[in-house]
Amino acid sequence: MDAAATNRHIVIVGDSIAGCTAVRELRALGHDGRITMIAGDPDGAYARPPLSKRVLAEGVESSDRWDLSDLSVTTIAARAVGLDPDARVVTIDRGESVSFDVLIVATGADARRLAAPGQSGENVVRTLADAASVRERIAAAQSAIVVGGGFLGMEVASACVAHGVPTTVVDVDPPLQRLLGPYLSEAILARATERSVAFRRAGSPVELVGDPVEGVRIDGDVLTADLVVTCAGEVPGTDWLAGTGLADRSGIRIDTRCATSLPGIYAAGDVTCFRDGDGAPGRSPFWSNAIAQGKVAAASALGVAPRCEPTDDYFWTEVAGLAIKVVGPLPLAGAPTVLEGSVEDGSALLEWRHDDGRKTVVAYGIRKAVGLLRRMATSI
Image (cartoon, rainbow, N blue to C red):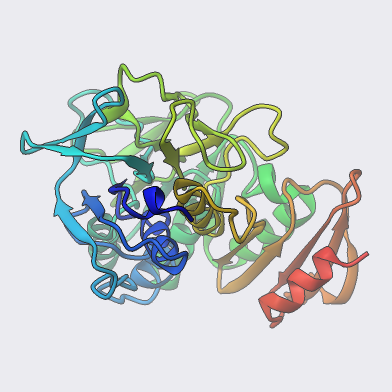
């Protein structure tokens, strides 16, 4: 690293896992210059995966915190509201400007909402405050509806039934089928149904009804519940970048070095989307990818070689009391090779081989170390 790189003032917008990882990697790579983090979450920097897994399911009041106090970082508790890439300035919501030499954008994503303009009472799970609010509502509910049968939706539904709240999940596809394929989707559907989770397929977009929200309209029918939670995906946090040309509906487009279309500006985490032709999936909003991209963006900001790839095909979830760990590319198609155990018994080690030669290994309710799964997925 040259002296000029060491003296650069690096500004990171977003106290997400990608942003906090970038800070640590900058210091680990030897950057001893100024680092400023613009941190917009009033609850500070914390891990988001435990929100649905621990805060909702176990009633834990807080999530794992990230302490950056040992890294000589100037933290500004504010939200970014504008960027002037030519002047190298970020504007924050209290009217001040923060100048930078190099910028790393790690503003994550916001929950996709379905409520009509002015319609109140929509529940989502994206922040610690969201999770705490929904957890309080679960404790008082007699029935629940979850809109969305993806990972988050199934985790929220699992938390509801674990606390004795019968729950209906609404989606256009069977649970998790878009990523895990029909084989695992059918197994998850059967297990969740046994545990008081009902499913309703929708043939058209779901509409929230009531003000405040008290139910959903599905293909002309209205279902009501004490608690309605929207888990319909996320929207990259790019509103503050309007007019810069950095982002589109899919997020900030980056290359495999996490570089954007503008010099000296990098991006990492859920706010990003890989450019077409870079050999990486378009959007992969998983925490493992956010960590990998935080490291790569930091290295690129310093002009040194990154210590890892910008993607990490690993995630885990827990559905109806069953832990599922996945290492390898998605989506999954067809039936797997059962290496150990039985899916019917809720304990199996599974392997999918893809047309390009890569493998995906899934620990379905079976205790296996992540390191072992990684080795299996990369073995010939």
